[in-house]
Image 1 (cartoon, helix red, strand yellow):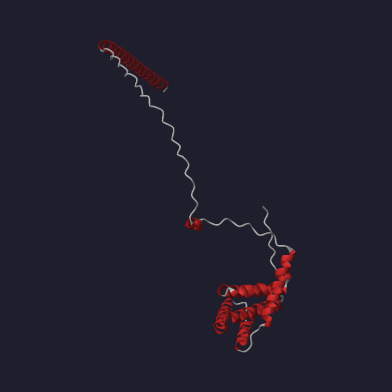
Image 2: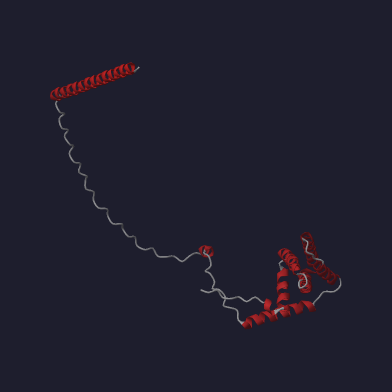
Length: 244
């Protein structure tokens, strides 16, 4: 068995040696072929370079000189034309200059405005209509007292009040309309004083009623302001001057 193993090892060693020798021969042959190819390429390059002459140099074009342009002449100044006065149409098209803001309202002016409001209310209280016009004014005040905190009820009462005021104007003219607006403002003020203190949320339906009727009947705004200013002097607006 030892002799067989020794023989097998010797055979393997011989095979490895033969394989290494074959690989070395192949590498040497490849190196020789590579050197031969390099020498051949160098020889061909030398022979080809000697036969081909270099191309002649290309002559450069002459420089282009731009023609000199004369300097532009200075613009001629036209003589000023005399200004003509604007025509009437141009004056109408021109916007008006902004007006200066009014001065700050003084205490005396505030007191005078409060006194005017009191006199305005007393004048209409003394001139209350009687008969059918008086009943129509009381109907307007009744509609104000029937306002509740339901939106569609507020709209319903506003439409009814507007219809009653239009009927008053149709019967007695502007004087009857002013009497109806005064009755509306007086009842709204009394209703707010009596109800809003106990139920503050009632202020919103009453305000909505006043704005809805005032949008349809602009004459009501003057009476509302006069009644509020006469009832409380602090309601009189104080116009504060804006800082510059």
